[in-house]
Image 1 (cartoon, one colour):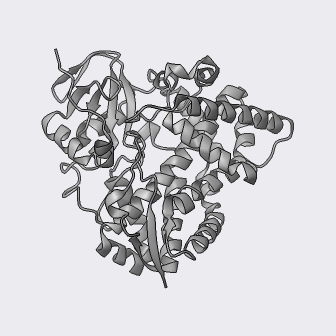
Image 2: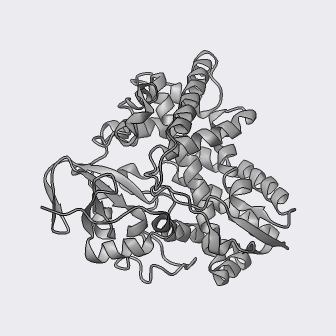
Image 3: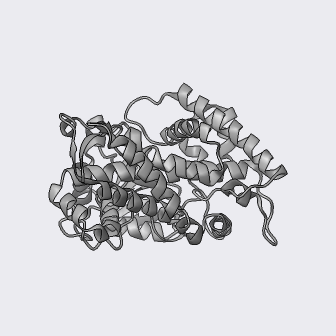
Length: 407
C-alpha cells in the first residue's frame, strides 16, 4: 500500500514552497499526501499538463465546490454551493454550455474596452501612493485595483467595495487549505452577507436590468433556461474570487520578483514593450493559484503510481511551472523568457475565463507604474520579513512596504 508523503504544511513552507516542489518532482512526482486533503499530488509538468487536458479521466464534476468547504460552515452557507451549474465543478457538455453563456457577458471585446478605465483607476491609485515616502503596495494598490474593476463590472455601488473586498477574502479563505486554523465565524459571516447582498441585487436586476455582468447572466438566449438565483450567485462568487484575489496576488508576486531581480526591473523600466511577456514570466515564476483539484473517474496509473477510481487528485500548477524538464533553469526570473505552455491559468476546457482581464490589469498596472517611477525598492526591513499569509492554494504577500523614486 502506498504510504502518505510526510509533507507538512507550515508557514515556512508557504513562504517558499519551491524547494518542496523540487523534491516532490525528483523523488515522488505522483504521491499521496494526507496533508493536502488526502490527494494524489502531481508535481511534474508532464503529468499535470496531461491531467488538465484529459477531462474524461480527471473530472471536475466529481470535485464539487461544496465538498471543498468545511462542514462547520453549516447548511445555511453550504446550500449556496449545491448548484450543478458551476463552471469549476462541471465537465463537458454542461461546462461548455455554461462557459458559452458566461462568455457572452465576458467577451474579449468587452474586456478590451475596459482598458481606458483600468488605466485611469491605476493611475489615480499610483499617484496617491507615490506621494508618500513609503507605502504598502498590497493594501494601497494591488488589493484595490481589481476590486474596483470587478465591482464596476458587476454594477456594485462604490460604497460597497470595501465589503466586497472583505467578502472576497472570506470566500477564498474558505477553500484555501490554511496552515493555521480557519476563522470559521468570520468566513461564515462574510459568506452569509455576500449571499444576502447578491440575492437582493439579482432580484433588482430581474425587475430592472442594467448594463452589467449580473444582468447579462440573467438574460436567457434562444433555447436556454433562465438561471436560478443560486446559479447566478455561484457565477458572481467565482468571478469575485478568481477576478479579484488572483489578480491581487499576481501584482504582488510580480513586484516581489522584480524587486529581487533589480536588473530585470531596470530592463522593464527602460523598455515598456517587454511588459506583456514579463507578466507571463511572473505567472510562470510565482503563480497566484498553486493547485487545483480533480477526481479520477476510473482506476488509472500516473508516473507508475496506481490511482484508484474516485481518488482526489491535486495538480500543482506552480510546481509544473518550475519543472526544468519544461522550462530550462526554471528558478531564474527572466522577463524575456519563452513562457509558452505555462499552466498558471490552467489549460484547455477549464482554462481560466478571467485570464484576459488579469493579464490586462497586470499589463496596465506595470505600464503605469514604470511610467511614473525610475525604480522601486523594498522599504527598510521588508525584504527579510515578507508575510506570505497562511494559504497554500492562493499565495501572495499580505503586505509589501516599498519606496519609489519618481521620474
